[in-house]
Image (cartoon, rainbow, N blue to C red; front, side, top):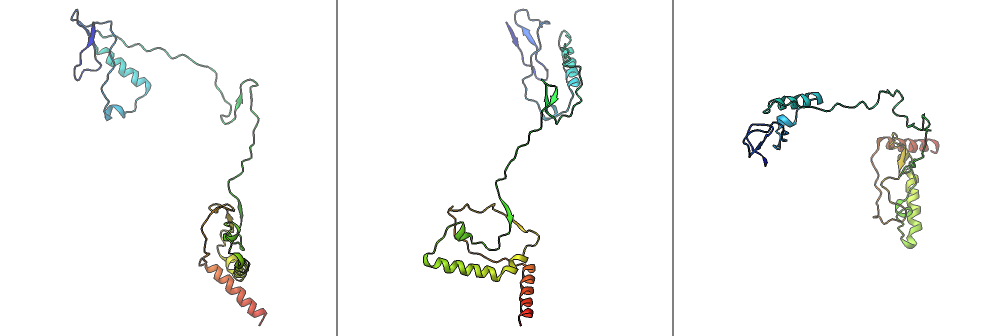
Amino acid sequence: MVSAIYQPGQLPFVPIKRTSGTVDDDSEPLANIDLPGPQRFFRRVSEQQFFERIAQEAKKQPGGRRAIFPEEPVISKETLTRVPDIRWDPTRRQPFPRMVELVEPGYVLHRRILFEQPNFERAGYDFGVLQPAICVGVYFYDLALLPYHACSDLQSQWDTDVGKCMPGDPSPLLIPRERFSVTGLVGQASVIMGGLYLFP
């Protein structure tokens, strides 16, 4: 019967025969089952240094057996010099042909819409007989403030449908609110002054 005796500070463990009371020189050293500490776990060693450490620990064991590591086989002696980004066809020994795929985005990019009524066009709100009057009033409001809307946000003349509900989706009634813009005020004032100058 062979069993292992734990001795603190001795790594790795050595199996001992109970029958004869002597150390078995032909036995393999047991693996260490203690949890490694930070000094042992977080250290950078190469594979050669790791093998050398195992060989030194094996020499310290009773009997002084030498640790033997198998030789690494040579997988290939050929050196590939092709571009790694090109997919290579091993049967024809030529690169695969380029494949182009058209991917459509999940949004629409368009110019800014100056005359838009999202509550009625997208959300589908209907106020019955008052609907035509409300739509005409909103149109003339956008027409009166067209210079202000056109001259505001001059750096971003594009808009997307990101964040907007799809036509017919339930959404709350949005109350439009004008954003303050210096360039919009300049454009609106220029149009008013130009109109008063042309039509006194």
